[in-house]
Length: 160
Image (cartoon, rainbow, N blue to C red; front, top):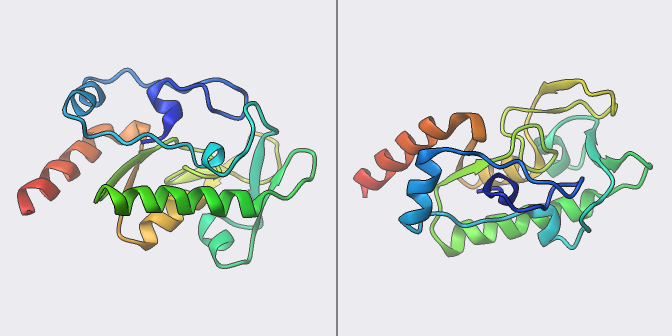
């Protein structure tokens, strides 16, 4: 689960994006949550310049056809790829099949991200971490889909 959703102040602006949800509290009490912030895992600072994907989405970044750029023009694609790899390794280490990640993030967005223009416009697409996890069979949900993630979690658990 995205660390910012768990109240950790790891976002680019030094804030969190806490979700207050009974299912998350249940998962926490059951020891089901592994917390990750791909950008922090890649060594990026808190706070840090806002970043967006220019030229596509996370799949495009993984394919080498798009880049992650900060507002100041610095390319941080390598850091985003590194953070995504850490998240994937955590999924492998803990046998994670379901992830809940922060929507609109250039790392964690699962269905929508900012469009790369730094204008506040959003477009359909996923972040780098979401794209990499999905390529490796992890089902990714946003913080707005916790109920769906819980259903997927329980159907995965009952299938084992």
